[in-house]
Image (tube, rainbow, N blue to C red; front, side, top):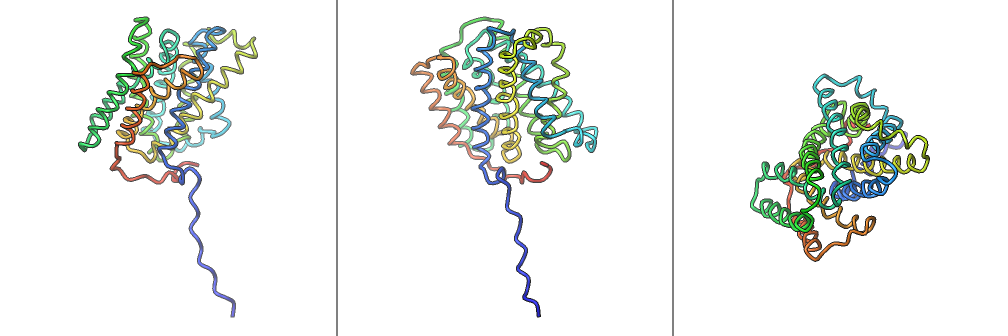
Length: 303
């Protein structure tokens, strides 16, 4: 008589499922401004819109080779496609306005302005006194980060405000795509980035042309695309799949703090005591916040 079979063990969760979603967000926050910090250094060789388009193009090519998102597109429905097309257009405009803003304002200031949109998203979904307190502390921290730099080009602030509104839209659409059935998560992001490349073509192609005869600038712009649009946006999708939209919006308070630190390391923009206090308040706020929404399994749909 043959020995009894051992019971089949359940498949072990992937690495992304074992990592806390908050860690993905921290990784996103670091790269969200590390790439643009290096992009500022590229402005001596290329105009901001040229850098923006090369960033989008290089990210789109990486995603195309990695994910081949047209397969997910073929199996998706009209509603998913409309969302991804809208997201692609938003990504094109958001990147363009962001680069025009950081060309004229300190990186930390642009990040602080950018936080205003997510604050509204987090405020709308408040469900507890604890989370209200976290939001207040976060706003206070970001206000300290912004207060010391609220001077400079009015046009730069105009672009920063446009970028703020678009970034709020990014959170809403990216969170929706993370819950899609077919164009889900990274596949939806990959398709949106390819669409963004087309949308941004008339905006940045003229300013990007000099890079094609400058290997150093082209290589640097490609690296900016990977560090600014591939790594952080992928981390965003891995985090959003398991974090409520309001919680993610509150955690965006880490971005101005991260931008301040990266501004020190890369651009030698030394923070004042007020900025250091602002960073500390932001960290306290994120630690104080509690997400009552249960995590969603990220394995389904992410091929």
